[in-house]
Image (cartoon, rainbow, N blue to C red):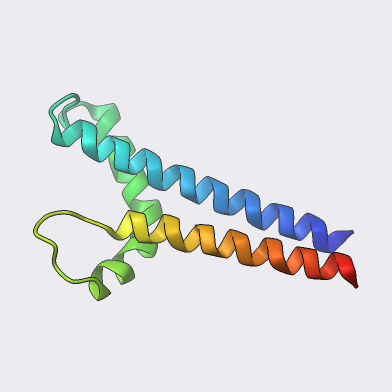
Length: 99
């Protein structure tokens, strides 16, 4: 029973990280297309907070990936990796159910 609660907690954490990556990407697009301005204190604070949370995850991926001319594909790689991790954890949970 504790094992399933641990799996659910990990899956919840993965879902939260995935949502934060998507929010940061949407914020980046809104700033890039001048819908919102970084001069706004709320937007600036939100960008700083999201960067502080995600930079430890994204920076190692950015170092490994080749330069693509200003387009950052590291959030997509993180979301893909989190999806793979979710599937792996689900598979492990199914194996544990059979035991």
